[in-house]
Length: 137
Image 1 (cartoon, rainbow, N blue to C red):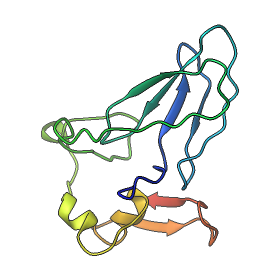
Image 2: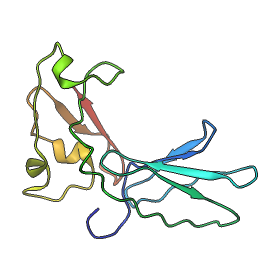
Image 3: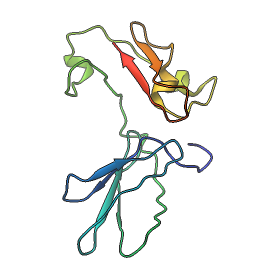
């Protein structure tokens, strides 16, 4: 978020394990850590990955830095793999960053995409904040 608030949808992983969590709409998360000098890895599309040693702290504040130089595009397909746009055999729709942030400030990527991509049906899973969205291609 632009107001130095929390970033929703950040992946938080305990380094060297399969244990992880995702931040909520306020950028908060909960994860149990074990071991000596555990390290949490924070990653999100459009941000540099950050590693933080936990130590004996119970609250961690992390500032993620935007990585706009390396973010060429995000390709969303019905397949479980990432493919370069030039190699796709499917129809391609493009949404610019200006279109995503130009009119309203949406807290999530799926909310910002609503109504901007032909052939994509985006629905709210519930009326509750943080209830999530479903995309059907």
